[in-house]
Length: 186
Length: 156
Image 1 (cartoon, rainbow over the protein chains, first blue to last red):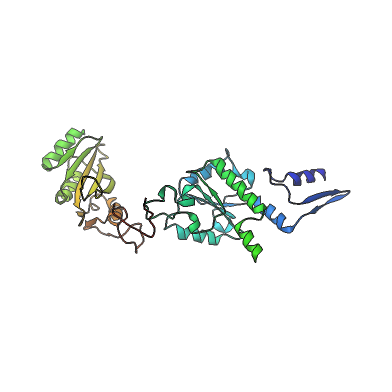
Image 2 (image 1 turned 90 degrees about the vertical axis):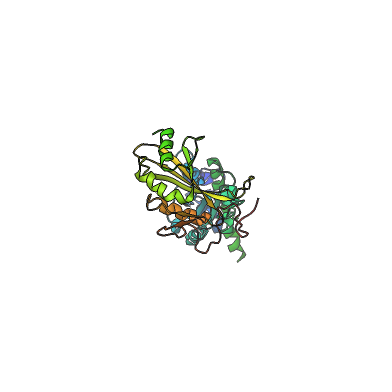
């Protein structure tokens, strides 16, 4: 029982991965007290499957983060999905051009709820170096789909993407993502 | 073949060609009406230029010197002799027309379609001169310097 207690207390590998609630050890067993929402959020945040989606050079950094040197699977992002129907989070890694925008929208629509969006790099935030004097670039992916976490950089360092992923986890755990706020209001 | 030898060959067939040897490759500037036979000669003549590896266009409308023209640029190489030549052809910006070379170098077919949609150069006798990438309802030639798009473009 002591072991389970410890496991629950430490949770996932990051500092904020603690089990959301109280764990009481009792003779011959134990008891946990929490709210179902918190447990669901805790579970979801530690198993986020990203969609394999990269439109330009930020994708190279994203691949680097997936590789052994940075390895985002340490935080529960291990299973990059090639199908939006199996993905929880889409990392917009690269420039979104006008012709790509409807494709991005369709990918987002095909993802099952709950779904999260990370805008990686200057292009996905604002159009980046293509903000001025370009006829073809969408000036920020949030013109097409809502974004939860923005990462500045051109491209961002792998550590910045890891930080964004952990920030997204914290956001989910604290019930502050766009979808959670929307469902609370209903 | 060295640039000097290429130059001599070209001078015999095109006496009024203008050369520029400042770069690594020999630049040849010729008139638009001599381009088609010149291209055929490049392919089948002594130079054996069998590979067109770059076809693009430059818009000179916004230069300080006030030149208003489009320049077609063809980078051509020979897989036999391993030499390169750059051919430039000046076009009238208000009515840019040039003969296609897609029947000589097949790769030009798509490149000419790209230049057609982005610069508005009309390639005469092209087999399939349609837009390549832009949507069918796109208006204007976006890579021209004076292109304006108030919806999608933010001016600096």
